[in-house]
Length: 295
Image (tube, rainbow, N blue to C red; front, side, top):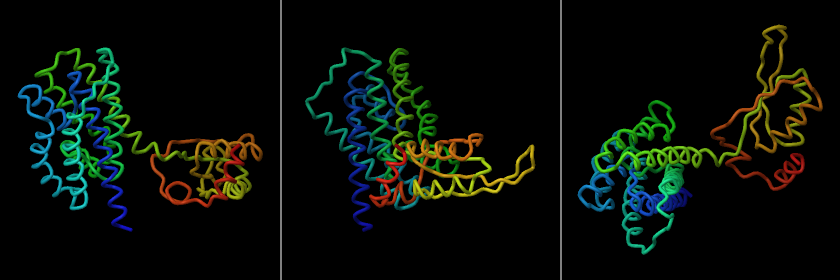
């Protein structure tokens, strides 16, 4: 089971780096757009000295992988090694593919596609525990130490590299590169977190027992009670908290309205959910029942 899990991770990391490399070769390199991180540095070297990014990626990442080993441990650095080598390999492969994507020299489209493909590929890599080396290692360390999302960490680190990219870029292409970087960082976070289609809902009501019982019976979602005290009335209340899909959130609102039209409801985004109904298998009969209630 463990070996199967690791094989799946390696396969998806390879797929993610292939998507990244496609974006870099077909949009960044083809349109002279810069990039953040070590990839951005390899593009600087490529434009100034014509050294293939597939080679410079490996050369520049070697000392950083050693640094990452001390900070992240054996498993993380093995996944990083796989990501780095596969990115280098895919950069080499895509440069050999006789493919040219016509976008009528539109730098805005090139920037959007570069950010989209790069973000999707990197998001897949990060989602399954890998990095592509370089500043990704620093981003992982920042995430571990300070709790920043990888996308935010990369944005800060990328700005430094982008400033250096002015050594071969004009201001016009730099502005389009910033668009690509913005799209990239947002897509990275979306790919990592977007798979968890869930919301958290708080319900403040005098009918908490009845509403909670109905949610558990009809939606088969677990609920949690928080004991609270009204700031104005000083009355004790049981606040309902539940994590559910967006469709089920609408159903919970309708259930709540049936019992208490004056209930206070607060819905929030949930970045990640682990458990039955989200990452664990849910019995088919339960899924069918939830869909019927939500409709």
